[in-house]
Length: 465
Image (cartoon, rainbow, N blue to C red; front, side, top):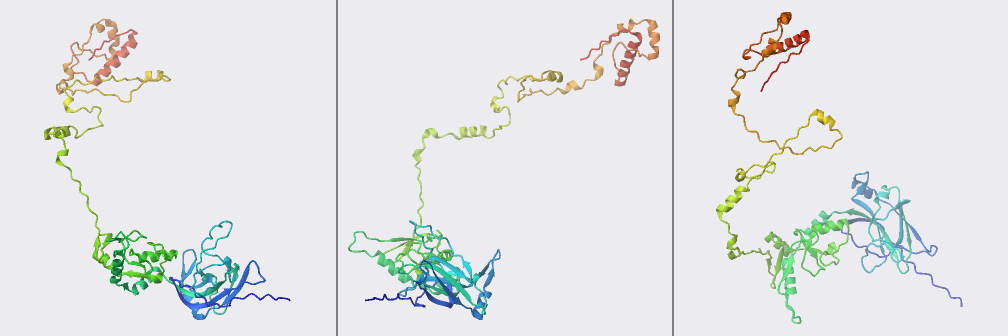
């Protein structure tokens, strides 16, 4: 009665798994065939498996020739050694898919997984999106030394994964666009037949579509189409630009149609010949309209014209030309820098009263320290009339300088004899007709000396205008 439990079925070492081809990579050689990551009974929580591969001299030469040095000392290779994971399913080509808690070591060095893992949801760890892994930087580029890969993962019930290594060449978006052109342009009649099919009246429907409007602008870059293409799996007529679509998928490969959000793989892309003819025929429109018979016409925007009735302007608002010209002449130039901005018509009016200027001497300023004084910021200078030049023609001889001889006549004769040494000049009684500046200064000096000698006060009255 001892029942023996059957041993669990082990997955094949090399299952017949096909990886989905990548548009931006050409496979040059297979280094490790798709190998199963089978679960071991000895390891319950984490599984670990080792793989070994070696490069041939030709493969090493191809990798080294494609090396390119980037800023910062980094190296990039156009020929790469690529590691891929997928589910062990043989029904169809498989996409990249990582096992849970994946950890990779190449020749004993930890390989960082690209991108960021999504945050946990409801306490469950989310898986990273599957991508091919470029392990060229950690591989020994030598044909004499083998390379070892260590893979650690967490097993899942009912799922088995496979791992494979390839030697690939990386491609660029311009090269893929060139290959797409080499595939050829789809016949325009195929698109016309599709238009007729869409615009054919359905007898069971109450609404009939008689025309179809399509834009000539790319939904990705909002620019005019240059290479109109769409996927054969799409049912719409709207195209998108092939060059921009390939550039976006080169940075982040999603391969999603920007019009219908369905899968649009590179292998299913076609260039629409009808749209190529439309773009060549009309270059000044951004939208067209398809008719029921498959023909099309450009959709140009209509220019809106606004008509102004002649009776809308009232008669009272009509201004005579003469009055308008005079009003504009008055307001032609307005000088805001002048103090008085009155026009020429106001010159005849009485000028405003002028403010008197306030002058403070130095002595008053010294005594006024500590006292708040008012000083106007703007001092108006009175208008000074020009001086008549006739006043400047008269000379000094026209003005008689009065002299009082009675003051000197009171001096005694003995004092006059004592003061003879002073060379006192005799003053004329009429006028200073022949007097210059030097003679006047000597007279003042002589009078001062005589005053000290006689010890008396001599008053000289000098009046001048």
